[in-house]
Length: 334
Image (cartoon, rainbow, N blue to C red):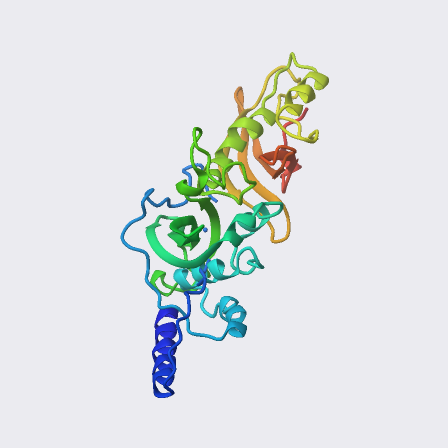
């Protein structure tokens, strides 16, 4: 849709130049991209093959005076339900303001990242490389190509997604929910490998598709399960020392246990999801139930929220775990 408009502008401009007897050779300007909770079943992002699929979308070079370039690169997004338009707008804008194009969890991951490498890449163009739909999300992956140090390369891949379940009252074919960018991966060329690291190796990067798929499950098994583990022979000091190795701040969450404190409750996780609010850090919600293994009439719900931030080594780490919306009317007595 956007490319058709660009082609129309190019054709019209060239015709005027010919009539005027002028011929301009104008290099290709960077084009933009328009800008992806999940459950442990992993709504992991769609990942393109290393080499992509098919040739990149060929878009005619925009014919414009130098003073018009910034306006073209900052083209507004009018239809957030078109994944290509969202991806293209992201390509055109980033590392500028992409708040309206990014999902809250991905947006939170942009804090503190190193994006200077993107300023060295020009003549960007977009290639749709993969798509998938499941019970939770519709996903499209786009690879951005460009020129780096005189060489045509794959620069990075983004995934844009939206919930596959439309707004109540709409049909699946009329899904009016907006697409948003939810992950960013540098290309293998820019990352390099252990023996020959590329220019993007070691950079603090936005949330990748792999991280997005793994973060919710890794936090559940590595932190939430440990917070909910009750050991009657473990003192509170020993417990806090154990949890201090897993998160940056102490937690007030107490694991469910019997009234006497002699044994633990049976705990189950029933749902997990990103609960990040726009403008805040990455947060992940976990809901579940507990039940007394010796008295099934004693049972209740629990709900915890993990906050994820960048640690001193710039890795994403758990800052804290707190209770959220916990029904205390039938909670396990400590």
